[in-house]
Image (cartoon, rainbow, N blue to C red; front, side):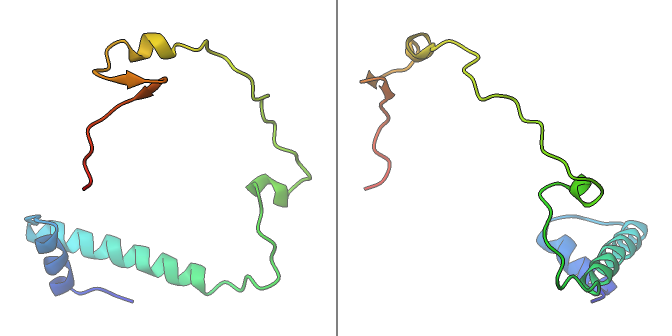
Length: 99
């Protein structure tokens, strides 16, 4: 896929951008370069390749170092809700916006 100058002009118009001619040419080459990269990536045969959870897993057998899921801050619900206009049973009350 390749874009033309008219495509760049239309995209700029839709985005409400005013591009100078040199900016338009630069955008054209950058976007077409991106599309070329995508096409090269699509051409790679990935059949039979298992997805990786982490890119380093392709090089060595690793396990992710995750920290323990522990509570690190106290419960400040009451302090956080002091400035709320309306609270009930620990929940913020808001006006109904959908009818």
